[in-house]
Image (cartoon, rainbow, N blue to C red; front, side, top):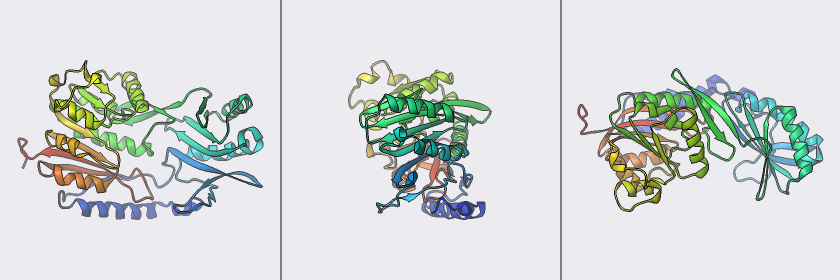
Length: 370
């Protein structure tokens, strides 16, 4: 797809593309769920909060560029319609400033943008050289001129001029929730779809009983939004950066019923099953939890066998997946004990073949179940 062709990103073409993706997933799921899927569509353009560009240098100067899969020669990017309007408004002046400054342009090979619905922008400049005081002076002026946050990175060097994060504000129902998003950490690429995903998951938890176990909690994206539906929450995440963000986000949003531990899903499964003890859980009494709901948002590989076995013991499972293929593999096991009661697709990745999926599953032997 040519990002320079704005006519590509029409509502009609987008809807056709989305309908095809949803139909393919519906066909995959039909052996487990035959009702209509709740479908949450994206805007056809201006939706992507993050962007990464290669910088290509030639006789005319530096250019934004990308490379097609399987090819080495990049092509120049002159517009990025799928990016947020804020990214679009920054691309040209940033590139002009780079081309006007030999200090900023020298051995620059990449630019990363991170923006928010709340209007903040963090730009990272990537270099194949060590950054010195001259670079910092030029970068300070660039940061001030453009009203952005700026970071410089080279091998084993990170220069943070002001701070390394932005704060996103998401509206979930009648609540405004603030999330710290760190430059090097994972964030959802489509914030408006993320808001719809959080609202859907929140509705799934309204009639909960017991406590919540959340695996792969990231920066607390779901944790902050859902914790108020439960008596207590135990949330786990393996990334140090994400765990630190999650702790901040919980505190900042006044969420006090969550215990957050930096552990893998495999380790927390072993701890719950008393296979082994973990120092990180020494102040947490697992026996005091009455877990009824499990929330998982795993990487593309899906759930490992041990975590999958743990999931089958929960009364209710909310499964968020960025890979329908591994989700279907996991469903072969989960369908033996659970049935799908709600299913939704969230178009986090318009114009690609990827879909984000949400399933609410309940145990077949649950009172009122079938």
